[in-house]
Length: 118
Image 1 (cartoon, rainbow, N blue to C red):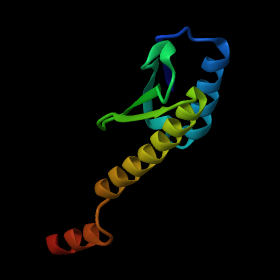
Image 2: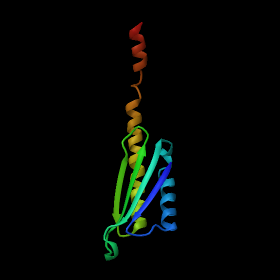
Image 3: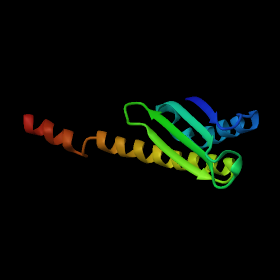
Image 4: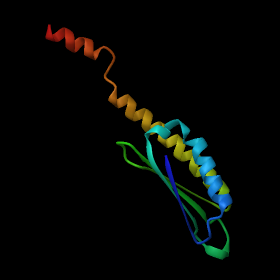
């Protein structure tokens, strides 16, 4: 899984980058084999004025499926990262499970098809 991190409105420190990578490695571990790329965009919406303005946008690109895009805005950047990573992981697991259930044939359908050909 390739992780790309961008920061806008502030400098990306080693501590923030490390936190993002650890959090994504932990939360997205279940579907890592189906993920091609994870883009993380961190931004400070209001700049130095403060307030609830730290945004974390995570885009997960899956093999053969549309991308999962999750955004969270909080006053604390680390909280925004944690919440967005958790939501992204739940959405990825749900999308992969839904895709698997649609791809599997109905139980016994192959047997019925085979019997009809006899």
